[in-house]
Length: 181
Image 1 (cartoon, helix red, strand yellow):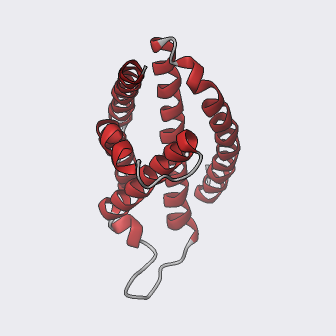
Image 2 (cartoon, one colour; image 1 turned 180 degrees about the vertical axis):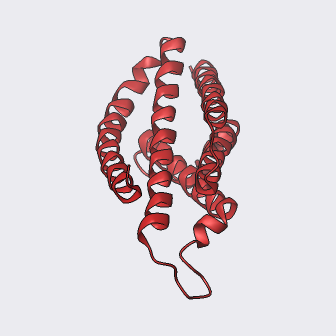
């Protein structure tokens, strides 16, 4: 297939996935509370949600790479069009931190109705192991995609990270529920 047509098709697929992710996100946050009664179900729901999120990031980054490579002309400036592609580790780290902090703020808003600064340290401490695992998975996905060397083996490893993170997350939440009740 023509690289430009492939890029446009990838953009349309990314847009469709964004719409589906919005719907999935609404359903996820409506169902997740009740699902903790059944641990395997909660693990499956969180894992599927995380796989959809990481897949959306993968499609979005692939679209970005193809868009830059196939549509933008070479820049004659100090910082050319490939700055993100030339420094995937830095971009991946910044993007990962942004995603993690936004998800922590969202978790705080879901639980408390607002960003409660007095409980943020507790939330950070409790969610640190899961956040580190998920952050590493996000970082790997972005870095490998921007470097244009992601393989099926890498993808399976990344999905494995998110399976372990889902198990850990459900375990921590059930532990906290038992302590608080």
